[in-house]
Picture 1 (cartoon, rainbow, N blue to C red):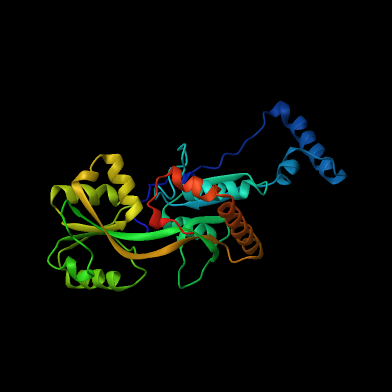
Picture 2 (cartoon, rainbow, N blue to C red):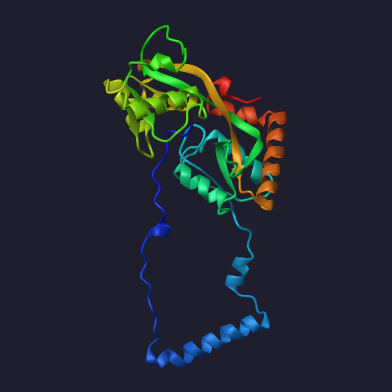
Length: 294
């Protein structure tokens, strides 16, 4: 389930007009000589800056959508426990790790096309467009979020009958299971359901709940705990654990390099668990213990 993203503007989409640089008349001879000199240097094998840069080791780029506390902002001191763990693993192999925040579908496509090296904290998908790590980072647990109530337990999707439901459009809450099927049927029936089409649906869903515009919405339990605590509204809501969820993994390109990086990640995860370092990083984010994969 992915339900809280950030807007991202790719500078590569900016329109840049081509500019022809024409040397002044008095410089044409020198310009030609400089050009011929550069060509001669290349032919003779004389190294220059561009070639040195081409041979430099490239950064190891990991990517994710904004889904704090799993994956947080690029410029944050705490970039998310899944990011912290992943960076520490690959830095241990001598990589220079760069973390990029993108909308979820964009982040996924960057791995599918091998432009980046790893996507962080993904639910394994049936299409298997990526390689998914054997080791998992955490459990993605779905909760039902309501205004403050007492003694309410999750008894199945039917408990939402008659309630006005908010959802993040096009996202899964139990990997196509009973809850997802129930919500889809209510969409077909246009039965008191509001889909939020946004990179940041939580910015809409939580205020809508508190103002009474909706009665309930599903959300990852750690994400709603994190957001509600930061917003100071935790005492105004009830978070009902559904018991539904999936494990979160690293996603890698389906290439020889991707397979090698996946093996390094799995080895690093096992090493971090054995040393206690994994639990140390998880504890810093105060995650619910049920979300921690042993």
